[in-house]
Length: 389
Image (cartoon, rainbow, N blue to C red):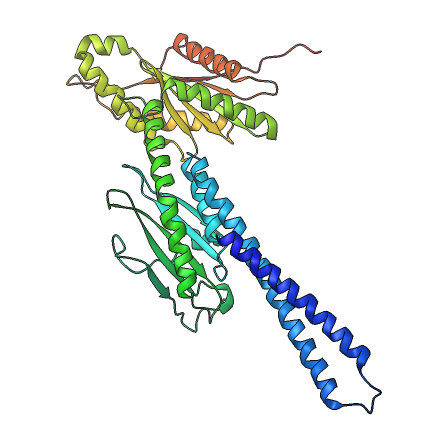
């Protein structure tokens, strides 16, 4: 109905503009010499003004129709993605079509993990510490906030966030699942009731798709996570390594791989039992999580063997990570006899023409060399000379 109504308005305005133009032309042709009637000249001028107003109305109607069309298209695409960050991007695309808003943020709570946050047109400083509603906990409803700044702040007023609309996202079980926030920078702007209603409609329409994406993400995480350690599992490791190798080769970026295992783990199991051995592996995973960067991918790839994919890193970076892990693991006691946890590692850096399988094989071979050399150490894979064409 909205599309039909808009089309009808545009047609009427176009017809009126053409009629006005024809009237002006006719009046001009019928106009007498300069000494003619002032009333006729005045009528022509008024008609010209009306034509300009109609043209402006037509232009605004066309702009509104295009905006509504884009927003409706984005609405239709919301259910087409089950990847949560991509879905939230589409929600912000639709929200930013509402005139008057200059930036946006959407935050969705995770299940036992940090919230997923996607921003639009915020500065790095604003994104790191985004404006808030000032309300602790879940929002009771939509809140509009205007911010005031002291005179000592030197930034141009028009560049600061002037205010925001904060809309709670309420799930089917009436529990809050996140917040959609829209911001403006214009000093004298205040969103109208219609603009707020449009934003609320976007928030409400996005909730079923967000909940579906959350459930998919939780199911996928469960399928990709090792139950004992909470690290990514072997399947995820090989998929991610293959993807990161292709990316690094395409963009000529560095990539390193560290593979390590617990020294003499069979003896540990025999001495303290398998249940205690599982606790040792869980402790090793905890130490690993503490040592890696946020961009690194830490995995348990089988038994007592672990691996870390290090994007944008060299073999030296991977060796530094191993040394941190080695020091941390030695602080873990294995029982009353004060034995300490020790690890051996193999390191490989991506070379031109490497495949994921080749990179892993070189790191694994380096691990076996470290074992042969006495354990409790890491070996860096040698660069393999490849024959020419």
